[in-house]
Image 1 (spheres, helix red, strand yellow):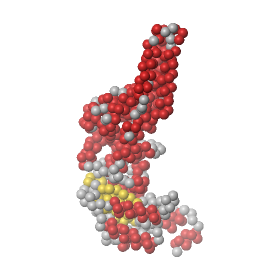
Image 2 (spheres, one colour; image 1 turned 180 degrees about the vertical axis):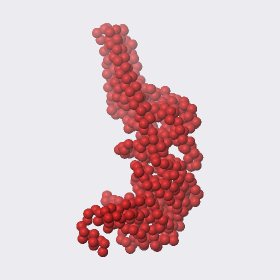
Image 3 (cartoon, rainbow, N blue to C red; image 1 turned 60 degrees about the horizontal axis):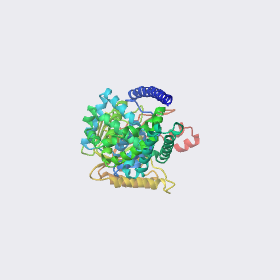
Image 4 (cartoon, rainbow, N blue to C red; image 1 turned 90 degrees about the horizontal axis):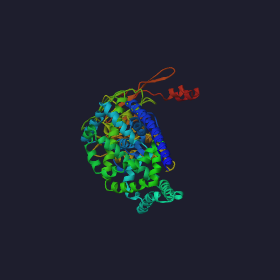
Length: 540
């Protein structure tokens, strides 16, 4: 018996040694990763639809709609901003971008948080280590939805697990009093029964066990963060929320073992998981914690939001540092957009533009000259201004505004809608969204291009005249020069131009006052190598 105990202890110590080496290597790599990524452009990665989960739970129907989000390629913008270490951080950042608004008080608080981490590298990296410990495992993105229906996730038949725990303990107590030949048989038998039940529960409720492990792990790290002076000052509500969750935090170490073993893949974590499986500690602790959590959902969501806001603030500080230049937006009461050296944050080597309008405008220009990119840049910066208090410009002045677009229109064959039908639906939703309470910035690319020229000009003029008198600033990119003449006194006119050489076309991508005077479609056909007879016929 003694030799068996010694062997078990030797194996345990060996596994502990391996775990310590693995843990130290992981910590060293994590520190290097945290230090190197700040202020860098994030690597392109596959889109994770799970970042929408928090937004789906709390969405009140306001903010950017799906059409605008897709028109402005906001998935790409989100990934350009996101340097988050946690799933709550990504979910809160996504929610901020979709929500597209902050009160003056929220702006001030958010700015204090961003600047705190931008100016204090040492403290930021310590906080990021705790954030990385929370991480972005797949199940963690579903915590808001999990809490939204928490009552349905408590396990039944709790008395069965208690009885099995008592029988396991009894089989261990009776070992010294039983004959040597079969003294371990009752204990081994109970271990097998409990482990079998644990495996069955794992297969049936793996997501729930993983989620609760992630949930309590987040609380453990939040508790460590709340002990730091900077966090207490920036997130005063965090400590109060944690105080109401003490009963939940007590089960943290047991419930996070399954999560830690899965995350690191080390042998010790797996052994501890099996040991707790034999004792059924994870399952009984799960039920205790769930009951306590059920009575403290609001406190938990407060902690979740604080962690997400902290991570999003650090990510915003990193985003700002990664840009060629940026600014904090200024707000005005009137219908006015004023920007200096504004550019699109997704473009690596951008051409910046100055732009001032106090009413709607038409933007004309030849193909590929930069019209669409420019109005997207204005709209995206209006979103970033109201979501993360950051603009890709040297100065950006705007009213608090809704942002809505009609740009990347496509046929919907499944719905049986043609391009034109879908386009007028998109435009109608813009008209319906305009209110007197809040200015609307609407970006429209190639208005009504899905129909013939005569009807397009007449209908476009009528729509734009309607928008002229509403509480909106319309940025309309068009090829129709007729509109610049018909609406010349009612809309401002800007254009993009190019220089056509013998062998190529050079674009400046600089916005200029007045309507466009040049065309390049035939030249582009010529440069693309179309047959001479087509080129000559087009010129005629």
